[in-house]
Image 1: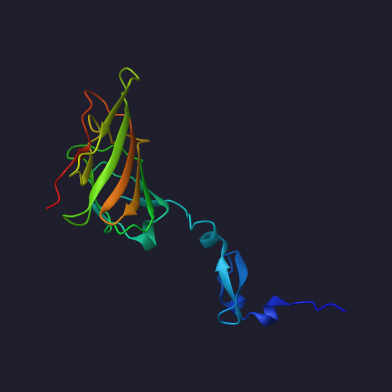
Image 2 (image 1 turned 90 degrees about the horizontal axis):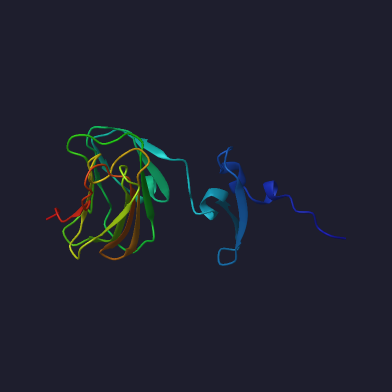
Length: 187
């Protein structure tokens, strides 16, 4: 005769899981007990976008890793990334409202972190492509709504790839004469 398992009786952790969360059971041999893991965590913990209209945003792994931050403000938003430690965390920004005046900035948290990557720009006047790469000291991205990008639909992808280094990719549609969105401003 075979044994029928009733996980609800054998795994009290199921009762602790949020009702709207899909939960998977995992047997921890070192602890000798069944534990739970959420399907979101197993799938990379990708969650719904986070919208912001704040004038400043300090990015954290807990609130922003593997999520899209929708920038919904024409007023400048100053974004500060966490320290680059090689976690593999990805941060994605999508421009929902075109920047005006001073422009949005995305900066590293300290004077030793840098950004390595490129900006791929498609001009709105001719649909030609233009590219810009970071320098060895790039630590800031500026999106001004015109020549540096920052129009609705622009995407900034940032990954914490190594201690002290963020990989960056920008997909922008600047207006006017394009210029590099990368600079070194953190001291």
